[in-house]
Image 1: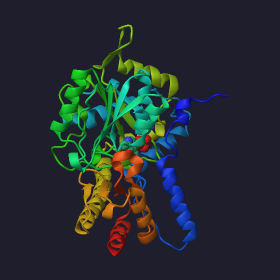
Image 2 (image 1 turned 180 degrees about the vertical axis):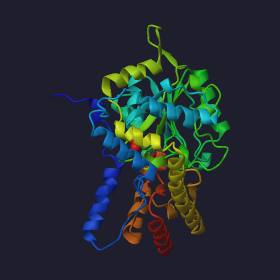
Image 3 (image 1 turned 30 degrees about the horizontal axis):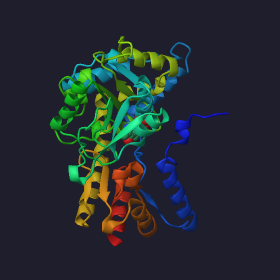
Image 4 (image 1 turned 90 degrees about the vertical axis):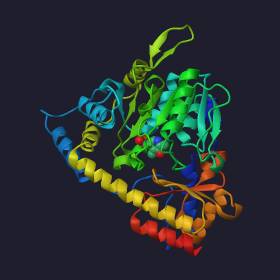
Length: 396
Ligand SMILES: *Cc1c(COP(=O)(O)O)cnc(C)c1O
């Protein structure tokens, strides 16, 4: 039997599997040691009470024949798509129609799957370092990838590609560097896409962490982005939905693409075609839970948890800089991208922190060649563990 050769050509293991292996080997040899994880980007705080209430209510509805829900609409329930269009977009002066919103089970699947609408031979640009999903999903499809280095030299802002690309994946606030793009910097990408007949896949999974007034939350805040950008969002980091699973993707009706024979098609209808064929929607219960984030109390509760994480980020950034580390991000994102000391490689520094400070970070090299010489710390741990971790780093 033959397999898809592109899978065989993928880079070895999934990064977090490698890390987990090293951590469990260490734990086996040091069973009494308390390890603090500032590694994988998963949240630690429980769901907001308003969300939990909505989950219970939806579960009760499922218990009665009169309110039971089976398969839902593939694009998502109207109540959620309308809440998204009103709160995430219209409230910011952005015109997005509920029919342009596709509810998903999270941004990983949609950022990984959207490439199916692209021709097999198109050229894809990703930043380096990068959230591995964008690169790997395109490698699986056998596409050529252009890497746009983001280092301290360019303040982690990628330069426009020198050769033509058809697709650009951008993620801001960025995972892993924790950096953001200003309105002006993002505008340059929209202009590039419009001038080069390219499309931008914009991952805004961390928009809720933005603190600076001037940083755009959505790519549609940029003029004419409706003609060239798809936006992915997730409740995972915003509201602790990593285990609940719900997100959404905006596909404006203004974006059309042409087939080799010159036939025009709207990406909105093609994505609908794809989803109706391969996806059966996020659960009713998850969508009711997501709806609760937009209520008055939900909004306040979710913000409180975001502030908690961002205060962790502030403490970490301050502590690391006081210790003489070059640390970036952490002001509008829950990630702190830190240069390794003394010329250590990112895996060497990972090992040092694990063995000497009993802290787990993520080696930057795992996110791409330009991540070498950096590690990523997350602000998602508890306040107590965050403070303890900084003290341990001070001690080594
Ligand atoms: C965590 C994360 C997501 C969200 O993934 P879900 O599938 O919604 O949990 C999306 N993009 C990036 C860059 C992330 O770090």
